[in-house]
Image (cartoon, rainbow, N blue to C red; front, side, top):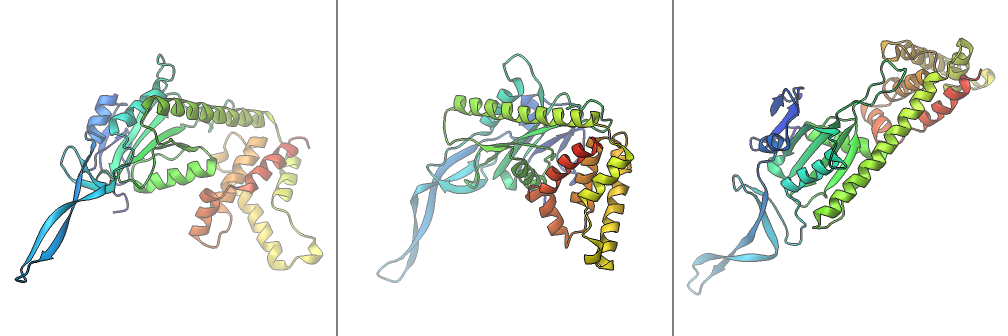
Length: 336
């Protein structure tokens, strides 16, 4: 059960049916009350934790008594009494309701304008982990790029088992299960858009942290859009395209290159050209942005890899310096 959704875990998804076909699919974005009733209509409750201590009396009879475990508590669900986990009694508990308080702080911004909506939400492993995902009501549009509409997501996560902190992340991964939670974590780490809230009981402090993090995220999104729109205006000639490709996938001196290496280089360049002229690049070929987007797709999804694992590490886990090089080469190609 890779999705890690149990029979006691609720979740919702707006319009799109998750791959595991579980949870409630809504036709419209829910209110806080609607979302919380489906996905998080319970709270973690700390109860005393006891252990059984066996003993043998003088006649050799075995008996047991229970004693409270000092320093630890049992986190239980308020709706069904199920045990979530045993945690230290110093764990700073963030309730599900407070998770929505934070979401509202992000959603309403200055308190007058709502520009973020609930996209998905749920819990995993019986309530050990909870998440709430929002999306911008208006997609980010890159002027001049017919393929340039994006929908940035904002993810809040919390753990009730003491194994993780309250955290937020900007990501392009739509979370609907444990697999996509992990993918979103990896994506936000690679982008540098994750943050962890300080251990504090003051919800006001958390709200200010959330707003500050969101402001930084929006600034980075605007920077991305500005770069994209500029590169779309930088036209590239056929000569510029050829020189870009020769520099992006360079060939050593012919006298030092085997026929096999020459073949591999030509094959890689052919793959890049196929991506560049494919439907995913439609409308942006002949621009510096088109060169960059084709290079990104080729590098992360087409370029030869030793295994699927190494391809995944290259695309998600490790910052791709090849893409930053491609940006500089693309801008240079526009001047040729």
